[in-house]
Length: 200
Ligand SMILES: C[S@@+](CC[C@H](N)C(=O)[O-])C[C@H]1O[C@@H](n2cnc3c(N)ncnc32)[C@H](O)[C@@H]1O
Image (cartoon, rainbow, N blue to C red; front, side, top):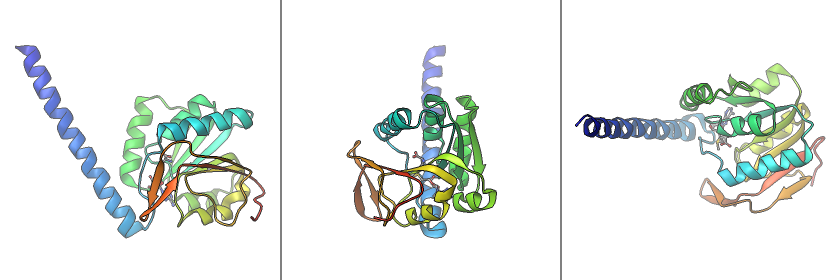
């Protein structure tokens, strides 16, 4: 009888927590899109992450620091930190994603992930530090801002959407699926830009 109660109430609590999580994500999306006018949290796919990590391991294994510019719940930052043995600064500016990131980083003991609660572009402008790799899964309305901060990185890697007007060093094509931004479908390519950036 104990196990019946345990499974029943366990399932009810899990469903309530899941609903609460989806409600927060939904509210966060509304705030991002309508008030902050920025790309909301959409997690990069496993296939994109694996392709990104393979690229870093193949070409930039000697590099030690990365920045996830708009880190969401830090899942990508944790994978890069663990699998590429890098210190990753994860910059995020929404309360929902920051809360999830704090909880998950603690659960997964992500010691090499440093969470920064800030607007990513203001943070990079303010701190003026240099990093090896900048990773951005942002969107077409934002990627041109990466040009202003390119001097902070040896390499910038964008997921799904290129930096407009800049010639990529390499493009990994069709790493799996696509991403919808503002009603337009982008095939999930990975764009690698070694700095200084070159105009296309
Ligand atoms: C598409 S998600 C990518 C999340 C994660 N990097 C990944 O690949 O799974 C974009 C994230 O960037 C955040 N973001 C967008 N603009 C930002 C900005 N200017 N400063 C900080 N975070 C930003 C959003 O809140 C969202 O969580």
